[in-house]
Length: 414
Image (cartoon, rainbow, N blue to C red; front, side, top):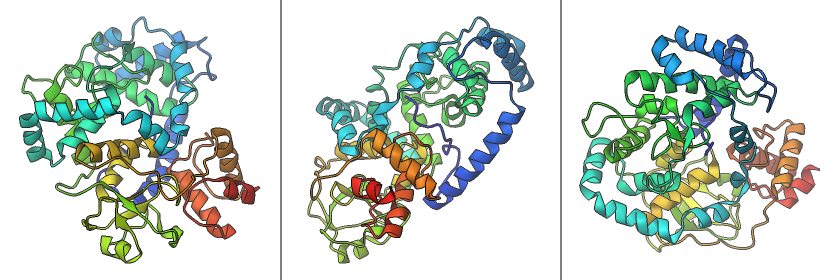
């Protein structure tokens, strides 16, 4: 699945504030790359894919890929219309957290996840000792991405990456991924024939893009190569290494469900604002399980606004947001991990959540942009930037500033 296309994964130990700065740098840098890159196609048009691929081969050679590897990886590739169709139809990330998590954190995944933790207890103990990342966190990623290795996908990784590198929408993202896929072959970790997986070119049981495979993939079973398709030890060790390199803090929480009062200064419920748990407690925030609020500074996170579920989000949740830029997906993965660690099912919140349709979110994004507030892509998905722009608009308009895109905010913007 395509989820990690603003590549914050190589930015280590980053705060959410610096993430905003990184966005500006990424946009500027990728614009410069596009100026110097091979010509790209009109959207959905594969008519000149052949000549483009020949140019791409020259770019690969210039990047240090040997002629034999370039030939083995790129000869005979064709444009794949099915990849473009899937790229244009990613509607699942328009769902609310409860909709998406309710489907993805299903009982069979919880049961299988618990069984995997028990079955591989020794391996997980060693991984946590080496990297500080606990088994539930790794297993939740493993389960969401491929159902614990059962559903890797069977599309040609090189063909998918070449199609997306050629396409007009994100060539600056996928050209380097295609080069990195060739580097994986040259390194000896995988052969071209082994490179089969998801439609967007992600590889292995926890779905690494090629660039992350090179950065974070490790040989954890000692056989001389990082095989994230077949080696369970390599898969799980590499996933822990990835999260650790992004700044995971050993022994610290990531997400904890809380109950909130009906009235709060809603503008403080912001992932960019962290307070000591005792301060949240003084404001009436209570642990959903009845325990005491503990841990380091945490944000009050309302994934569906003030009427929906509520969490304290700690530093390690920021790591999830670097791992995966989809707010709903990252939250679902973190919640899944809490369930595997023993937490109960999430509550529905304090009332009825007023949710916009994808078309209405798109209209809200357009209205935010017209007001001079940056909602990120105008795509109908209420991601992090849309939520922050919504909060800013709510403050300006005198509305409860919980950052949730609702009909009242849309009507006021109009």
